[in-house]
Figure 1 (cartoon, rainbow, N blue to C red):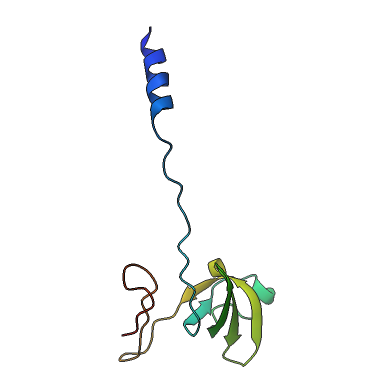
Figure 2: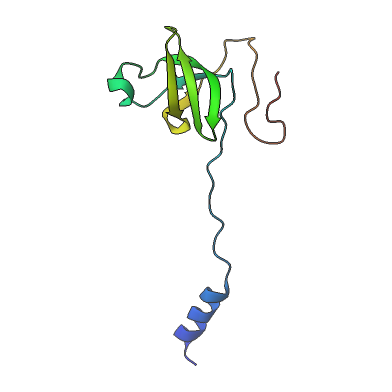
Length: 101
């Protein structure tokens, strides 16, 4: 058999690469910032809020600082907000997920 046949057989025998899964970091009561410029016509772009409820993995409701409740916001539309110096933080990934410090 030729070299190409061996390469093709070797490639076929390899396990497929593991699929990357999105890390779900949403937790109730964490502070977030809306980073989707197209959400509500950009009215809430870079505005802060607090996750009120995690509806499903990757989807939540957020109460903005003006008191309005926004339902079904995707995790990809948000980023976490760092607390002020000395504020409480929550671990959102890894071995100690959910712990406060």
